[in-house]
Length: 199
Picture (tube, rainbow, N blue to C red):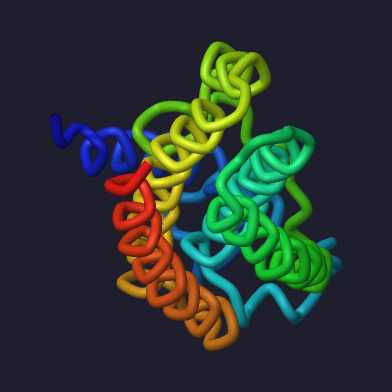
């Protein structure tokens, strides 16, 4: 069931509409009556280096990464898990924690700090509370299998989100990170599928 692209499009549209008021990128102000873009804009000049797609990418991907780290922590707290799965969870944490810090810094630099993107569980690979509870409850080899199944879905959502940034982003650093995520997580998906087939 490939509902992911449509769901992502809907989510992105909703979020972009919410962000429209922050863009401040109108030229002459035509058609923007009632919006005060006086000389003392509160947005720093750095915002010009990031468009709505960049802000959306950083805001959503850091939340996405945070859940991947949470999933990895749950897995790493268990005994009897295949060592290959344990190693993968450790690699995911090591890669994604510094990326979260980087995206937090970008959002601060862009003057675009956003609240957590609640409701990101629609087609972007995010786990529901029930999914997370199932992982918490799983033990031993079953926990390893469930982690891989969930993380494959999670990574597929991240790759789709990153591709949106590559296609629509403006900030060169953000686009470069998105390309890195696509490459790294596509490779990890293949690895996870190989491991899953042997468990």
